Amino acid sequence: MTGRTQPLEVMIVGAGITGLALGLVLHQKGVRVKVIDRQPLPEFVASAGFDQRIYAMSLASEGFLRRAGGWQDMDRTRIQPILGMKVQGDRDGRFSLTPHDGQTSPMGWIVEAGAMSSALHRYQKKVAPELLETGVTVSAVHEKERSLEVHLSQGQCWQTRLLVAADGLHSDLRERFGIPAYFSPYGHRAVVANYRISGEHGGVARQWFVPGEVIALLPLPGQRVSLVWSAQSDHAQALLAMSPAQRTQALQQQVGYELGLLEEISVPADFELRRMNVARWIAPRFALVGDAAHGVHPMAGQGLNLGLQDASCLADTLMARGPGPDCGDRSLLRRYERARREPVAVMQGLTGGLAHLFSASRSQWGWVRNWGMNRLEGCSWLKDELVRYANR
Image (cartoon, rainbow, N blue to C red):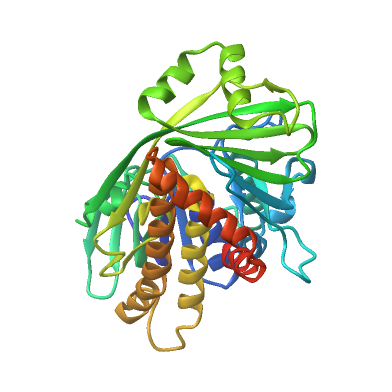
């Protein structure tokens, strides 16, 4: 391959879940597509414990992953259906969500990041072994009359109609194309760990809004839950400095004993919470998807779901193009950008606004948020709409 130009319709940089799933869907539709990544994809080894990196996946995300082909290869014993949600305020405010009337499927799924990525990779190796190349980076991009010439670090040269950046929040490719990204820290860090419980979670995801912070316990298979504690940065560091027993006691004091006794079963980790916006989603023959295009607060667990919606929208836009335009046609990319910019902005505004409201410690905001929860609890049609929206 070195030394001669290879023709493609689409090249995707980044073989995470979003990038690889997009590549598989396009490949199955007959598109000449290549996915590259700087790192070899690690093999996921299932253990008695669970990966700390988990995703709450919507039914729409499940549908796209079924199109890609990876979902069917998942180990069903390591997938937890979400059967409901309970949210509790710092006083008497609370509300719950369940599948709306007539819905027989779960509200979503909890999956391990490593298991999902590995399932996609296994399927890719089986049906499209030439689709993915790892251990390479983009060294140069040159604009031609109706294509981009992409040079890789190991000497290969590809000519593609469309180049897609799926290389994450700190996308090198986005920077190479001169697209500004704007980061806004929330002043919080998320502390994550897994716990064994003596009670039963019933497949229900739980959130507690305590003064200045948000705590979520997400159900895992068996008597296990995954903690996401959105804490002010100094408190997050204090939590990490505690012993497992001290940390468990601090958590138990906040969430009570509805799930029984808690026992920490993984080493905790943390990450900074930041919002990220881009000035634009596209450039000539270039498009952003997933974390390269946006970053949201993890409160609603929508980060990967938004990325897979990007991939689904881009794939559908390309497949509906007709015989005239090629995959990098400007009108197609503008259509994709218009379709995705608004729903992402809405989700960023919703999660960011709720994060500020529910992390505020001022008493007047505490009254507002608890009153709002109780009003929502008594409004069944609005709760059904929330469930439908979350599964789009």
